[in-house]
Image (cartoon, rainbow, N blue to C red; front, side, top):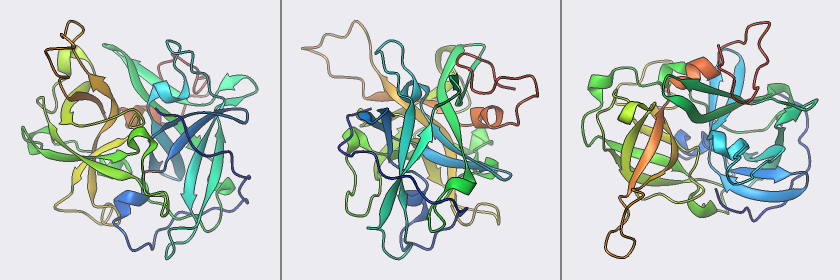
Length: 280
């Protein structure tokens, strides 16, 4: 996460939309820039992406973007940068998403046998989106479920905003090249993530980790990319000699199938989004 250079934008009009006619690869329109705020005070910049399930729409990012006790990071809302014209990508607006309602957290996070998972989802009220909003969203059909199809050294892309850097004129993320650095389908050291070898920076937290879909179906043709993971953080060795040894250059990416759990309809008795809760 990095400090954002923008201030809050006015609230958007209430109309539903979800379309893209822009002359760029749809991958660029699936990953909005994410800024965190406490009230009107800007805090940090991060990355994220859209995920749709049935009629519901979510923003996916890292859990430590919405709350991080260790760094005393406690935002109360997120702001996305939305494109407003498919033919003119210079047109954008800010869209605010509250993180609390009546004092309760509205995001959803999870844990598994290895502990907490550094992924969070926040549902977006489709009816509150500007009618002209242009975006793309991953769906369950985009999840990479065939582990054998992801080979060692598989080329990947990380779609985000390193150090907040992006095409500030057209409001688009940048792509970093990555490769699979641990066996895909195996939980590295028992945790729910795999490793990538890529050059990443602060601000990339929450970025989608994807590979090109060579055989898209009718469900994925509009966004022909496979969603493998959610970039979380760089990995390093605590006993590394800072003078003699370079950083490992490895990163943690949480398996994206956690999104099936986090976006499932909550049980009636569940307090959805309660920090530390195990979503159902």
